[in-house]
Structure formats: structure tokens, C-alpha cells
Length: 396
Image (tube, rainbow, N blue to C red; front, top):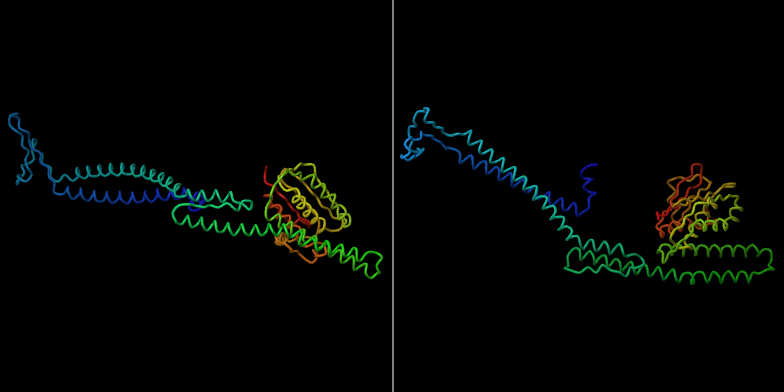
């Protein structure tokens, strides 16, 4: 892992504090180097021309000792055992200079590291203070969902970048709240506005075309009634999709195993007509929090899809474990790249999945219901054909 990738995974506050400490450290190193160069140059200039003369010390204690001044020594005395004259002691001056520089660099470096750590801690604290409004906005955004879109950030303070960001977010919430309210009104009114005319139409067909009828009108009546039923099923599926998309109003404990038993019993006639065997392994208990009606529709759509798009003498297997439901069926080979199309409304893979057997809303509705329950619905091709559909709920 490269340092850039590792750094990018750190929290923003940590990266900001590290950047402040790093800039302080670089600035301190540059200042220290500048001071060292000037100090070395200055001491070298002062050391030039220095001469040191040592004379013998008088033996008479009453005679004051006066060291020879370098300017008075026009002709230095010859070097003897009692007199030592050393001029321009470059080695001594250089040694003193190097020692002083080393000590200065050592303690300056120690102080620089300590101050850099302090600057990093101070940067961490300042970053926390600066990002406190962002943290408050994040907490508020997490609390806001489709059930409480009336809440707002309502950030107070000066008109700065964060305040404008909060105002923009509140404006977006206003638009979302209006959109959700419009959807709720549609779901509440669509059932009556769309299904009532269909029910009246079905009653008219049944009464107006009641037996006895001429032979040529019997088929017409059955076709009209079949069309009416399909329209009702389509509307029911669309309303269910809209209901699941807007989330769950309330939840309760749902026994999926018991629900699956009811679903398989309801689909047994369809399976018998198509020559499909349903094998249910319903021994492992699975209880989740959710909407009973929506979860029943979810299992119904998935298992009906497995029965409906099968082959003669095929089978459907339903298996449960601690957190997942797996539905496997036989059938034609399904290309893996076409799997996402199955979860798009009104999409079918080929002409075999015709409108006479459905509307292409089974798996899309099931996926929407799963998402409303924070579950995932995935599918993959079976090794010998058909699909393996997995419904995975979050761990309790």
C-alpha cells in the first residue's frame, strides 16, 4: 500500500492536523538551517586574525602580571620553554565552533520536534473546532429520513461557506419533502381512483355477459375478464412498488418460515399446472423485523417467478438459514450479464418471458421490498440453468 493511499484513508481531521504539523516542521527546519549557516559564517569571520600569546608568569608575587597585548608585539620573542606563542589557532577555533554548532543543532532539533508535536496537537484541536458545524450537520442528516423530512439543519452563525452549505441542504430537503408528500398522496388515492373503475368494469362484464350466452361471446367474455384481472394485478404491483419505495411506516416481528409455508401452499396449483415440484426446506427458523404484507409479497414474487419461468418436470428449492433465504429453480440458461435486467421494471430477457405470464414487475418489486427492509436481493445463474436468488437480511 502506497503512502498516498494510506494517507487518503485517514480521517480529514487527522490529515489536517498532520499537514499543520508537517508545515511547521518544514518551516522550522528551513529556519534552523538558515540560522546555522549564518552562525557558522559569522563565527568564521570573527575568528580570522585572532592571535594568542602566552608569556611567562613573574615569580615575584608583588609584581603585577600584565599579559602582552598582541598589538604591542611587533617582534614576538623566540619560543622558549617559558614562553609559548600561538598565533591563529585555527584548529582550536574550529573545534570550538563545531562543538557549539553541534550543540545548537541538537537542542534546536529536539525543541523543533517537541514544538511540531505541540503544533500537531493544536492543529487537531483547531480542526475539531472548525469541523464542529460539519459534524452537527452530519448527525442531523443521519437522523433525517423519509419519515421525518420536516427536520432541518437550521445552522446559525456568520454567513460563511458552512452556513451556505447548510442552507443548500435545507433547500434540498424542502424539495424532497414535497416529492415524498406527493408520492404518499398518490399511493393513498391511486387504489381508489384506479381499482374502483376496474372493479366496476369486471362486475359489468359478469352481469351483462352472464350465462346463457351465444357460443361466440363466451370466449370474448373470458378474454375481457382475463384482461381485467391482468390490469388489476398490474395496478396492485405498481402500488406495492410505490409503497415499498417510500419505506416502512411501522415494523413487527415476522416469521418468514411460516410465511413461506403459506406462499408455497398458494402457489401449489400453479406449480401443478406447470409440472414443477416445490421443495421447501423450512426447518431453520428465521424471524425478522418488517412489514408482514410486504414480506409476504416479496416471497410470493420470488417463488412465483421461480415456478413461472421453469421447465417441464422442473423443480424449485426454497432454503433458509440464520439470515438468508435462497430460492433455486431449473430452467433455461441465463447469461450472467443479463441478470441486472431482471431487476428493472417491465424488462424481460427474451420472448419466452412474455406478457401473458406477467408484467416484468416480480423481481423489481421484490428488490424494492428487500431494500425497504435493509436486506439485499441478488441473483446469479444456476450451473445447469435457471436462477439462484438469494435474499439476505442484516444480522440481528
